[in-house]
Length: 348
Image (cartoon, rainbow, N blue to C red; front, side, top):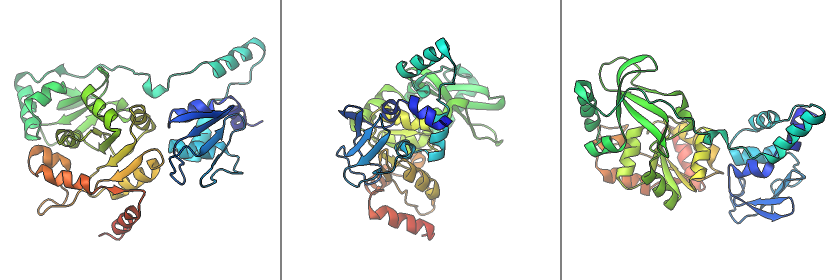
């Protein structure tokens, strides 16, 4: 028996799938998932036998006679098949004997481990709380110029740091706190012309911002969120009454996807820079089976071809521009999305 086959014997398939999507029992050794990753039918038509490791969609027949459960796991998780096989193989219990084997087997079958993404590892935030002193006042002016208010600065617990990851600043630091626990941070340089202009902690790819109670409650109630690249973009949407999260870049990590699912997100809109259509397509095509995904196209303005939500926050653009873009969001499950991709490829 190969390592992958051996690992599949030990893999808790129901638990693995449940980390990515909602499941319900359909009988002995059988579960169902609500939405088929292939035909997008959301009437619980995908049946999975966790003992035999087979599946099929009653609507489109996807999976019938397939036999490779890793194909299903890849579509559900958004990972490629090779990555799934590598991850599953890494979970195999080493071949040991006697009492050691019994203990390892019992641990694998009976211990429900918390996903590593939600093992919250607190960090020590750099610098000092608040924006005191002469340097702090300069940071305050920078943040106010970007559209934040004094209440925002207090609410988001902004900090000031002279260094970040051994890079000289000064830095205005945005703490990332999950249920009040600091788990990451990003610094924005507000003085001097040296690169980099912003710098993040190692853990930043696992998290999003802001994860305060008010924003998370809005997301959970509406079951939807707009994803943006930067903190000021996120604030612009939130101020307009639209739940949003900054992903600190355009590459969505597995941890971030699990975080969205943990908070009940069903509809997800991507709102990246106007010239980032390739990144948007890549993300939308990757996560389309996990969330009902929309693309918010930010129309250029005269004199501002790369206008973004941050310009709305600073007051350079009227909020109506952003709200209209949200209203015209492109559903990736319609022909309009394919037309949009074609237009972008042709450079229109």
